[in-house]
Amino acid sequence: KNHKKTNPESRLSVNMSTSGSSSAAPRKLSNFIGGKFVPPSNGRYLDSFNPATGEVCTLVPSSDASDAKLAVHCASEAFQGWSRTEPAARAALLRRVADLLESRLQEFAVAESQDQGKPVSLALAVDIPRAVYNFRFFAGAILHHEEHSTVLGPEMLPRAVNYTTRTPVGVAGLISPWNLPIYLLTWKIAPCIATGNTCVCKPSEMTSVTAYMLCEVLNEAGVPPGVVNMVFGLGPEVGQALVDHEDVPLISFTGGTVTGSRIMASCAPLCKKLSLELGGKNPNIIFDDADLDLAVATTVRSSFANQGEICLC
Image (cartoon, rainbow, N blue to C red; front, side):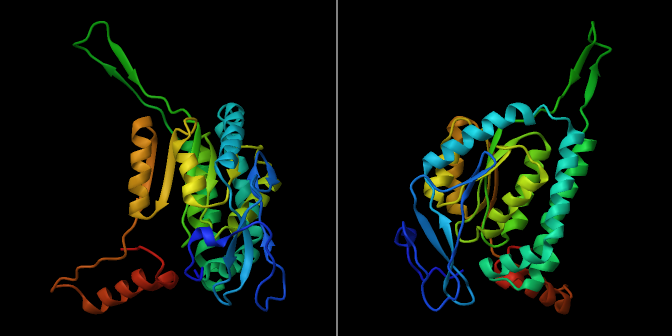
């Protein structure tokens, strides 16, 4: 992803104009908070570049902690009703999201290609279908969750019953990377809302377009306002605000190991539930008894699919 090797601060701007020879003005995104598209409170935006041309194609909100706090408030309010919604109703809504997303398959694939740099064919074959599948899978999974109980005895009198219940946690902060933008973002959103939680998402500031488009789908599907919120911006501004917020008991992060270790350190004093998927770049050990032709083919695929921006084993 070409950001012309500048630091994030140098890409901040209040009033942006089209650069280079682009024939169209950059698309300006908005945050999605409480079911509404709203500009960042500070009025600042980040340039996002088309990897094929190097031209500015999108203006991404450079939000700050105030936007994150507003989104958390809306998610907390929505949690009161959403957490009490029957699983069957939640499942039906997720299936509706999947259907609408699938109906715009080509549009999403082209947008993912222009924003992230991957071939349209790859987005059509993998990224967007997997995003659709994520919603359908968890729509089905939530209908088959079981609670368990055991009877302690007979040595214990009177006998005791030990049981577990599954209840929604609250507001989740979901921070997703740039290599598989909507694929990995929906892998976080779908299980989160399927199980009755609400969320505030922070997609990568370098690949935000399909996340923005997903918000349009969520509204059209009838997802209640505040159940899913999208705040765009930089990690130290938006991501850190979510990690530190006392009303966000769950954090899911996919990205670099250094950032992950900082998130863990921030979450530990608050005993937050934490999911981390970090780092790595395809280390392989090929033994003497391996099928070399198969090993080489597998290594090439795992290392260089998706322009090499992937961490398969």
